[in-house]
Length: 210
Image (cartoon, rainbow, N blue to C red; front, side, top):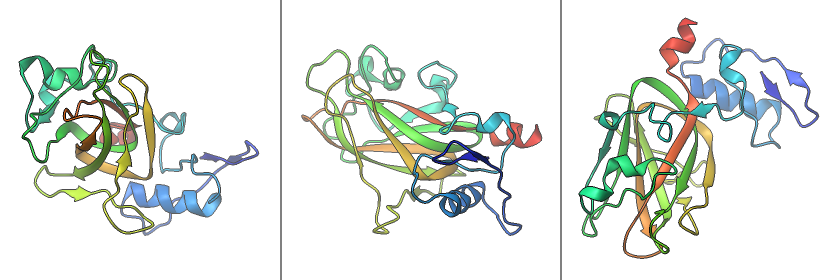
């Protein structure tokens, strides 16, 4: 189900040849109302579609345990992966000489990721990421960088502009994955300090089973 500009409910059916839940989401959304980017349509149960972006996956709340988070490096032991959670008292900070830092989240089952929320470092006045890219995987071995649908190149997202404000990016074609990575590319200063949350729908096996 979706909601158009006049707030009228529209019921849709997934095409019979759909093989991916995100294909259904993207194609149906574009067909119903290409003018409204906030619309989200997906084959789902009623409870699954109660909000446009779904729900937080649980970085801020702790539902995602530390054991499900991996990082390429950390600046020191105080700035490791537990501090990467949205609204934490500090931030995850990779080493300055880490040329391609990343933070990875592993889910127990497939999720559909619909939006990314980022922050800078809470206990520093000038540390935040200004751009980043993301990738996803179903097996943790083969990775796909998210593409800009207009240019067919890797999508570069704009990051933050201060330490504590949220910057939210809705993913135009949601990502179905079991592994999600974010790669901070540029920063306000040398330290690529990051806190984040993801929103979406899942675990898909539980939702489909329901």
